[in-house]
Length: 165
Image (tube, rainbow, N blue to C red):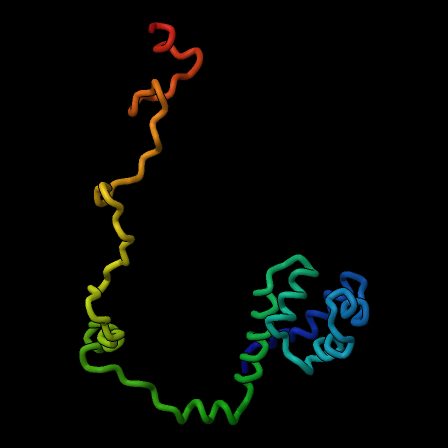
């Protein structure tokens, strides 16, 4: 039997005590019904993604905490379920193809490709139409200012090169 895991409702009750809150005040702050918060504290309803986000925001933590808490609790309950255990024991394991058993990766998923469109090369990125007079793969240049050399570095005040000129 797996170790006992605290339920999300038990943890939520501890948070309520620690923050000196009751289910009614928490419900008001989270804009949830009082019934929803009470059902959560009694473990009669599960913590959903939406509720995890609300609790995380309110208690300044990550929603993953609440979701992990719920998942771990659900898994511990499932581990104690004798009918589920019997069902799991009756299910055979999938057998890998012979090529995959030798360590070669299964390539069936790689073979399934979407059909190619006519006139389109595989793995080709769409190209924008070229402008007249423009070189292919040439980056556009900003217009040159009068009296400034194209490749000249900007002059910095107090630069030694400027004082020498």
